[in-house]
Image (cartoon, rainbow, N blue to C red; front, side, top):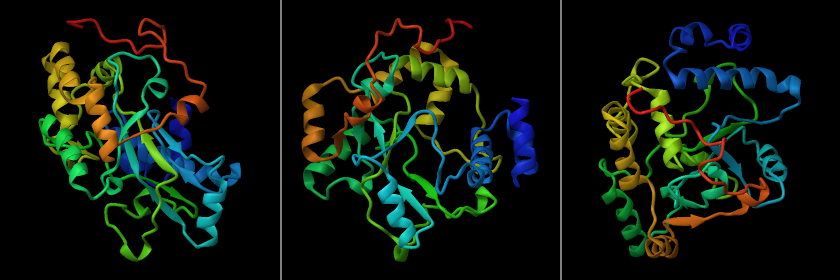
Length: 278
């Protein structure tokens, strides 16, 4: 809303550069959200900032992340990038993907170096039109302790600093990008004919995301077919093979912790899909 824009205008160094694209570029809005969080953190007593989307969780099996973050601080670590694991739906409809999604494709850095795991990886790549293992991002999410004024000054995790590498499997990011048919349809109907570039300059590669945009324009049935062919997995035997070879992992703690209860797709919490022809 206007109040948020006013706050970002006064607090975010990149606002002038990003303002023109806020209505059409999700990444621009995310950058300003991150800059505002970094600006507000000291007054809120926050020592670390980690920006997540509404379909992500910062997950740990420990009772708290405090000890982990304190350990990083004592070691002089100011930025930590966490691996992201991608949720795989096993049911077509859900009103609560946090409750119903407990199967995850491991980030490829965490997949075992075994012949069985390579076969597991190939299963996902072969069912993807673009040969993708993970259908969305795979560069993790970063937490910052001493933040710069601008998001542009954050170290890019894709440029791996070998000297600064720290092994960390927990905490991690759990990503639930399209863990239900209605969520999938609503996502791309909302995004619509989005730009071929990020921030007006970085080309969006040909991928699942861009293909879904084109299929959305073609009609709902095309999107439904895409979801069934490349997203959902309903074969219990294949799920068992994926877990056994280590390509996938099963995590249920988040559902219990959030007291989530899988609900019927008819619940009022389900995303509203635009009528056909709308």
